[in-house]
Image (cartoon, rainbow, N blue to C red):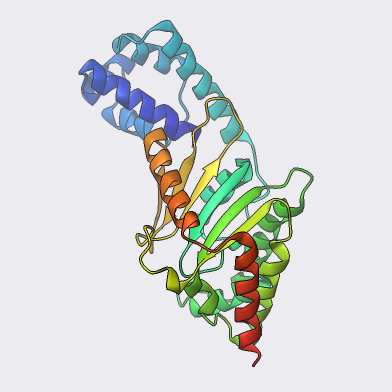
Length: 280
């Protein structure tokens, strides 16, 4: 995440200076591929390279110092091993888990699924069975174990703050059957009692809403100068938005859908009524 932020700032400096990638690679005595990787944030960056590019782009001392600080912090972060390293989880989820672990709070909009931090083991297994792409069904238990480790942050000494807005469709989808779904909904009601968890439901009767484009998560951090980042999952990849303006747009979108939803109190009663309906 820090690497992408650093790469994005270097890209903006290059464009503002009217320089081409070939000119940047010449300044580094490197290939153009290296500049592409630096601007995408996919590789750690050396201080001499940062200084050479800042000189080429006529960046002032304050900007150069800021970029050097980002580069050092990025290099340090890349060396750290998290609990998720080596776990048998989906490759597209590894980066999200690492970013989630660093976040202080999350705002999440879900349309078709219960948010991962709220899912019961049975619900996770039901999703795994439905996913025909698995080559080894035993790996589902590894995913369940990883999901439970993530959920431990909800109950830690410094708990993750999460505000989730869930469309009614996710509550009605019988993932795993009525019994599994009823237990899942009861679990949601229990989690909603935690001081760091806020759950709202957008009911069908609310009609048209602004978040038809798909689910997303907004992750917020405590470091000075840190901006919110937005994550979206697609069928085959993950998309990250790390620009302050884009983060503000999604924050406004989330506020609108939350404003159209039931209150947290009414949402719990709504979820409970759906759960009771499954046993009738």
